[in-house]
Amino acid sequence: MEIGLGYQGQLLEELLDRSVQGETNRDIMLALKDTARRMRTCPLLSLESALEGGGMQSLKEADRAALSPLWLGLGSGDISTQQNLLRAVQTALAAQIDQAKAQATKDQRLALSLGFIGGGVVFLFLL
Image 1 (tube, one colour):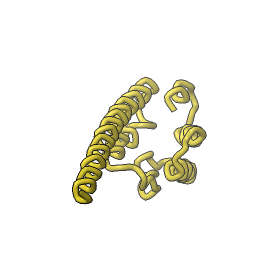
Image 2 (cartoon, helix red, strand yellow; image 1 turned 60 degrees about the vertical axis):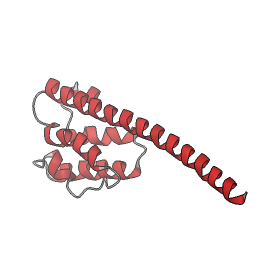
Image 3 (cartoon, helix red, strand yellow; image 1 turned 180 degrees about the vertical axis):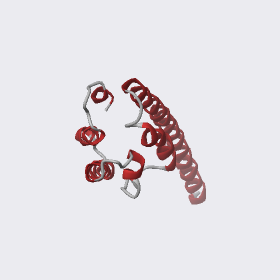
């Protein structure tokens, strides 16, 4: 999206259609396509309004909060403002990815510890 904003004449719904190409999450892909269709049907619709009820149920609340500035600001303002907005949202999402990785590592350590403790308890019980 960020690269596409650098070209004059890009409509937001065209950018949404292009962003679907690399998407692997089916819910998000369908929501983006549906949002682009809604914006074509009603050109005065903002991105936020077009997204309402448009899916993305797989997103967690924290993800929605990180993306909300995008829904509110994309499509308004000049190109550099929109590109800065995309960069800010990318930074917020990258921080969430890092946090999720750290939590996954912590959960793995906990599961491993519980497995050892459970094995030890079973061993002692069998003695």
